[in-house]
Image: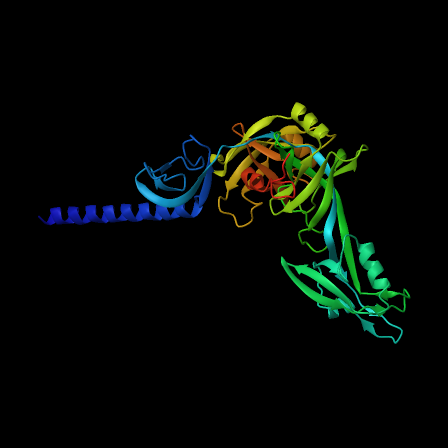
Length: 408
């Protein structure tokens, strides 16, 4: 009898421990599984990274919710489900030159102005301006260049200049009171501004049906302020990669190239947290459609850690395929451009560039025959490793620009 009681208590303890372990496991998966997914019509909903996670039978309701369970037995998380047909894109990998004209002018620095009386003042600071602010208009005139603002200040004769300013997405009005510089002998505002940016990036994918294209996988930001550049207009121009500065530990590498003659092959109209977007010319679309390779978009739940390939260009203007390893997937990353951690494993790419270099951002990633992401960032401490964005994040922003919704 005594032995039976001990066995009963032991069994109860083991059952309790097993249940506790299962609930702990459920919590583990709940934190790591996506909060929402997009699924193609007719596709079985499953999480490639976690094959042990199953869809509870009968829980998809009108394509809006689903309950995921551990081994089909223990519910671990309810998620939102959107259903739509996965688009087919032409994979990029080609470098392109970026020419941007800002919406307004960006304040990149403030400085004191020495007046005739020997005083040092900063009118811009007195007006409440800060580095990174976007001055949208002055004296009621919309600004499109720093020369335009400079002319307004120079001709002011010291009269107050009303300004319309944007900061971190919010707008406010202020007044700039120019002072006469003893050094330059003209009226000045005590600030440096920038109205345009040029650089090199990599195209990620193209929608053959519309000519829309996506690149970079992260926003274009000002090199001095770090702020996202408000885009007024822009051009995508052909570029030839002349050489590659290899990256090393603590020293980021960089693609070196020159803008090719012959003008632009498209316009740029949208700069977002998930990349830059634009519209190809008819001739450029025809060329990319003839030369490029098509892939169906892979959604986040289709991705798993392991081998993949990146399409990128480290010399000339034609992309090559290189092997990489997807180390980690973060389904719910707060930074939309840092969803995966990747490692370059291809000896040829490591030899040519040392890994990920500046200008490679936007290089598309292919896994299991689907376009799943794009390279976005490099680890300065180890250039063979970096971050990548989900391709579906970029696809969601494809038609955010001025072109979206226009009739053909």
